[in-house]
Image 1 (cartoon, rainbow, N blue to C red):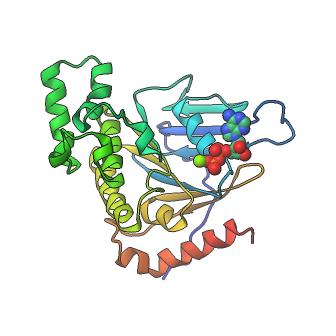
Image 2 (cartoon, helix red, strand yellow):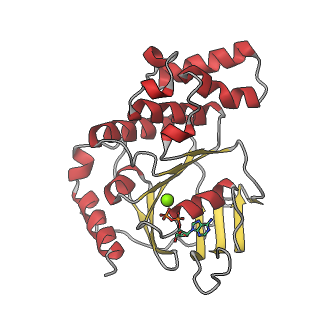
Image 3 (cartoon, rainbow, N blue to C red):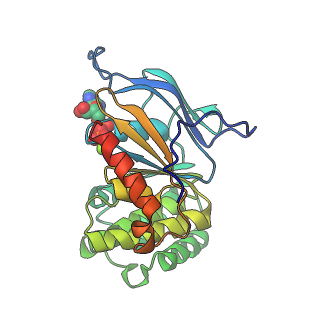
Length: 269
Ligand SMILES: Nc1ncnc2c1ncn2[C@@H]1O[C@H](COP(=O)(O)OP(=O)(O)O)[C@@H](O)[C@H]1O
Ligand SMILES: [Mg+2]
């Protein structure tokens, strides 16, 4: 069995720009200049990669995702999308929030929620209906298409949010602890659905979680953040075979070795 391979990622010789990049990013809120929330963050997300970012509560994970989404600007440094500086939100970078109940419009049906970005994009009604029907089928929402969010389980509501995100055909999916509020079994089902979807749609994914095992299970790489100030403490190439399997992957000695490594780091050893 190979040792745990850990390394800080060096710049790739590849000529293509990374899908996303942070270059020496720092964030300070308000007047608290002596207490930066994020400091000296540099990282690349490769095209098509599934990158997990893990770290303790309050270390700046959501702030990092908001930077990548273009919902806020860094105090220092640059945020790049396909080589160009991010200067605002874009349909090419879709966000999935943990709080699915507030992310969905309660007065719209499942189909109506999924159609939302298609309406904004100005698609015709027949085009919208065809795309919504395809997504409803893909996400196993057929029986729920005409129901309202409040009539659905948490897992189903989160599927609707993911379907709505995919409807806009994003090149990047930014996910902020999307499964944090779900029960363990539903969570595992959605993890596997997400991995299959991300591979099939070839969408670059940044997945934020505070769950080490979830980060390793899903990720091609895992970046670990520490708090105060939020900073990168480790980058791990996961290197476990795909497709991942809820039983065998989690029992794989390499999985456990990575888990031990990250656990130690996040405990501050
Ligand atoms: N808009 C804001 N104004 C002031 N402080 C903020 C703001 N957003 C986040 N923070 C602070 O930044 C730190 C990191 O927050 P956040 O990115 O939400 O962390 P995480 O998602 O890892 O829990 C926290 O201390 C939080 O209170
Ligand atoms: Mg957060």
